[in-house]
Length: 356
Image (cartoon, rainbow, N blue to C red; front, top):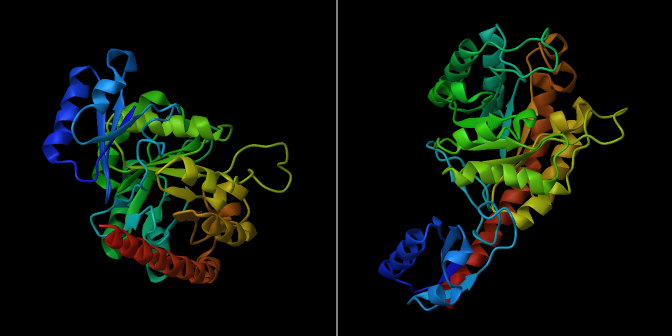
């Protein structure tokens, strides 16, 4: 259930309701908005009477949540989640869309990674992505440099100021990755690795959850729910393509309809990966632009200093000159979206001030 407090509810009133719910076995998630405070209570609603909760001073209304995704859904958290990093970068809501770029895998030549990172910084990107632990379909393919790869990412981050996004494959690796990464990525294959999701719920690092290749949106949100239920509210949803009947022209089918759907039913930031979503270099720009127009809070795409000799995903990786050309065009669209968002935000703030 969710308990919507009155706009002028006091801290004491909010605390009293929270204490009552917790005393009856409910897990509490407190969401403070600009106007209202919403208490999301997860537990057995048979243990209490909603009428009793409604009678507490400061309570505006009590609603029962019908959706199974109680924490990731908008019923319990009407306002957009905005995740802010130590360097001031924000993702979510009406913030400027972000760019996450880099090679699929961190390889043996550090200079190649640094070349990509420097180009990314030059083009205004906020995140450097790269895999140190690589889940590959074949055991004979490159599996990643592991901690050495993390060290390379960290050094490139120090030199450029970019934030690091890298994949976590196993619960045992979480403490190690926490030392190096700013965002822990759950790959598509692990979207329903519930033991991993639960463990990530106990870390404070933001988690980027990639949609599984056969997962529907309900399953996607429920996977996010596992992370949030275990204590970590900082989840980023990533649409990266799903499997359909047509694989002759694209690696996956990029489900762009998922972006406005997720934004309607969830408050979490949404990122789109057109590299994995299409598997084709020439599709990264048009599908990336389409994702931004659909409402994505950011894009993730692959860039390599020498794509034709990449250890993985070379066919869908941009060369540095291609990356710069495409990102110039994408940045023009981001600038327009950011201007519209700031204008809308200013109007909202003015309206809220007038209603006080």
